[in-house]
Length: 285
Image 1 (cartoon, rainbow, N blue to C red):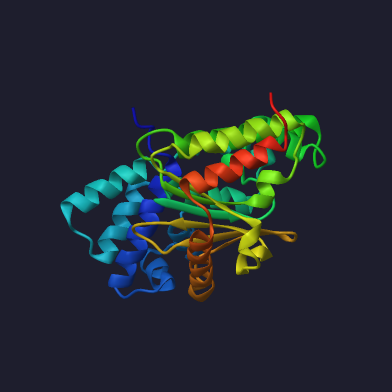
Image 2 (image 1 turned 90 degrees about the vertical axis):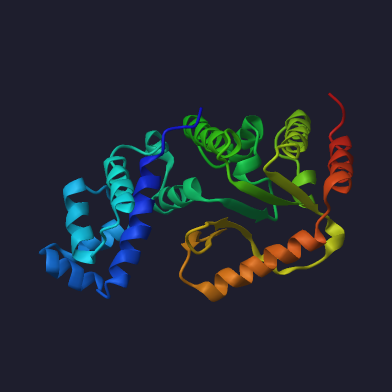
């Protein structure tokens, strides 16, 4: 049974459709706000998808933009009704910052996820014991438990159900061989990624040390793809996290980088052989 549509996805549908309708009506955000006697910030928040929208306000916008198609109007009214309420990650607000909260809204709507991490396994792929061992030097136990619960909930939404996105992971050999926690933790983690390779919507490759230097040695990144919007680039670095959508040249560079990584990385039996070789370094259970 499919999950109920998250309110963030309804807000995203409204954001895209209303921005498109305003542009077709040849109105700026300020002109639209003045025509409706609204504040400019209200229009900005609606088009950013950060607030819910009442059906009454929606009708006012559609009338001003000249949107009359009955089916589209009906769909957007349903989206407005579904834009209220809490998103799935709201219960984890105690361990979320604003930038990652915004990113999760995009991730929930993505049709594809492509990611590369040069040092450790990304959160998408981490087992609970691996995540706990990785976070142990950084936070107290109670916070670690909450972060791990968030990661597990996030994984459930990505990997379960018929509506999960197409996922492509390039895992660096460094992640396979870097010991995080006890040897048993690594054996479990390596077996976990082999299991994920059998998922029908997952492609997992391993970038060997022999691949040499490449652009992505500078850091980890995620590319989220959408059928109805531009790709979003998410980068994490020592100074923080950043979602990038409007810098098309930079996004294109990372798209090219990921394509290069997939050409260099091992797939299928070759990837499994390297995973098994790394597992032998951590002994047997």
